[in-house]
Image (cartoon, rainbow, N blue to C red; front, top):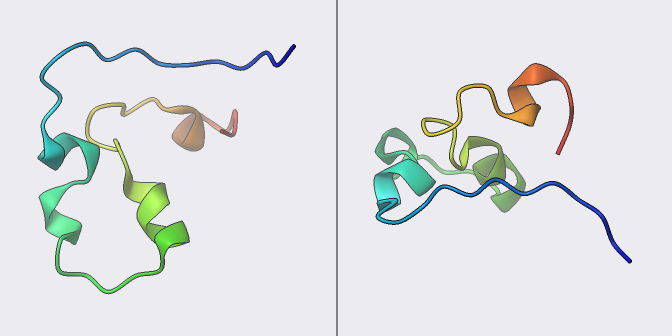
Length: 53
């Protein structure tokens, strides 16, 4: 059995929340893009709180 945490956001999460528009035209590798995913929706995400992801 795999046990992990998941965040449930509900309905109507728009694409600008999934990946902030300010990064739309920035050239970056997928790993760097992943660091910015959902950053506006979850200001206290594990990535920022030091709990890892």
